Image (cartoon, rainbow, N blue to C red):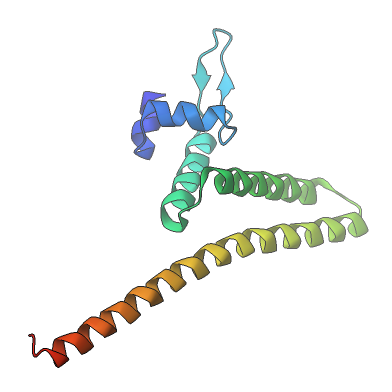
Length: 136
């Protein structure tokens, strides 16, 4: 676990917590030790990116992970399904799922843009005050 935590820039406690709340589910050895795969590490890195870049809360991260798992199941299903109509239906489901993920991201981005515009407005007012009071 320590290696995984170090690879992802997290503490062991955070990795354990993410497992407790269902964001991560590593396999277990017969002795009960966590066995992290390359896929687990990649998933954890995606979670961290969503948390850091988009500011997702833990609840949003859980939804993000759930959507990612749904996409993975659909993608795997599309590969093995022979029936063209079923395949088309699954592709449609996958598109809806991706749209749900994009909507989550767009909502976060909109909040960030709103906050940024408020600071730009404040900066403009400061510039006006500097001119008014002849401050360099």
